[in-house]
Figure 1 (cartoon, one colour):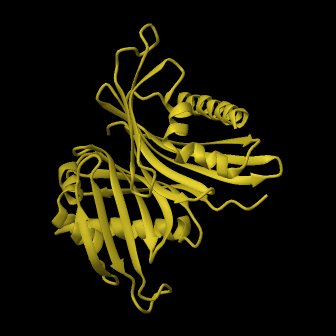
Figure 2 (figure 1 turned 180 degrees about the vertical axis):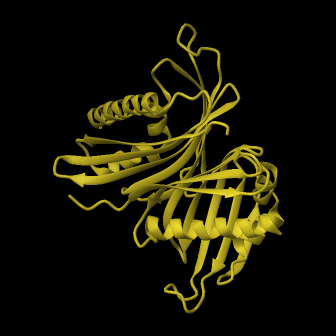
Figure 3 (figure 1 turned 135 degrees about the horizontal axis):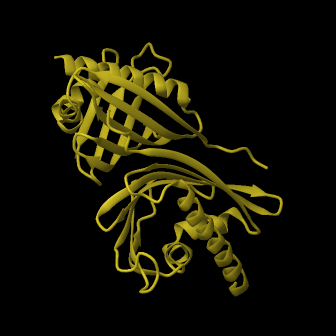
Amino acid sequence: MEQKSVNHSTFVIERNYPTTPERVFAAFADPELKRYWFTEGFNKEPDEFQMDFRVGGTETFRYHYREGAPFSGIPFVNDGTYHEIALNKRIVNSSTMVIGGNCISASLTTFEFLPADDGTKLIFTFQGAFFENSDGPQIREMGWNKLLDRLAESLTQSAVAA
Amino acid sequence: MPERTVTHDTFTIERSYPTTPERIFSAFSDPVKKRRWFMEGPKSEAQEFEIDFRVGGRERSSFRAPLDSPIKGAVITNDTVYQDIVPNKRIVLAYTMTIADHRFSASLATFELVPGTGNTKLIFTEQAAFFEHSDGPKIREEGWRELLERLAQELAN
């Protein structure tokens, strides 16, 4: 028998943001707000980012890493679809990650925005299928923690700007 | 603190079919075959079926539930987007289920084909998010067990 080629994994990250569910939701729904925390930073050079935020709409993010950084010169592509949107409440989307032409994972991600006394609780659930030569769930979870930190920073900055 | 509205669950079903990975794969990739085992159940009435079997391609199928079922003739729609396809080896898709206008789940489904001696193992894994008024993981798993039994009949023909 051949080895199983897919590794399935689920992880959950919870964050509290000191702002309203409306503002956290907007950081996902508004392409300019999402572009900042999702596509920039961490040595990434965005090549293309477009999103059509409605059920059935797609999102594409193409990027590469700066020269000198690990993986530099290799094209990364995330292709996604929005499956469920409940205003200020939840978003569910799927996406694949393709590195240098090889699809290494497919995942379903759920973002739940719950009003809390001191702001908003975000419950992020990642359900993934990792294929051959993929990063695997631990590195992916680290990546999402960094992104959600950056989202926190962006919510603070725009609060100051406002 | 308001209650959460999403329940996540993962389940796996394994089946062994006395045929090749190629024949099983074609029961997914060939629209005529797929429609036969996936849509034409004894109880439900197929409404629409469109399939674009390629990465990024969509599939939509809908059926009317029996009048004597708990959901009394409601139309249920499956909207699928193919995520990854490796011929004769695996298919990964994301799908939502909708009853009337209410979407009640989104899932990632993986079909892996593992060749054996004279048979092929199919490993089905569903990673699901269930919303308000959904069937939930138990009924979903029963539904997939029925479908994978219907696939066995399709392959036997």
